[in-house]
Image (tube, rainbow, N blue to C red; front, side, top):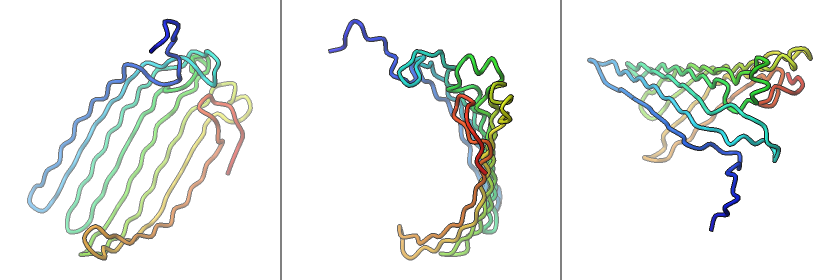
Length: 178
């Protein structure tokens, strides 16, 4: 039975709305796909048990791919806006930033190979900027190979590397990791 004193400040989002559209088709021997998505929601204004006003959830994502003759090229972009940033840090320039990725794959019968690259940058508050951590960046790239042994059975190996500069929390406070 809910209490009449329930403040609903359990650090999740309320009134979340997600909208998305996707298209996929084929023209002769060329496959194409596109997608767009948007999500929004109200924050409950709490961080670690302390009542702090937090920016609402707002994310926009776009993606696309083209395939032909066993090759597939795909790309994706997401903008996270000020999602989960404190209002105070948002006023000081903090932003969750954006991320983009691109990948290329080739499939020949049961064997496939792929390579990918991802970059995510976010702006920290001017408080963090004064400490020399004005931007946090995560870069990941890798290669992979797979072999389909039988329907539903895939053997796969990947090698992935990453670099994380000015690792911080969502509030724009932290140190440097390279």
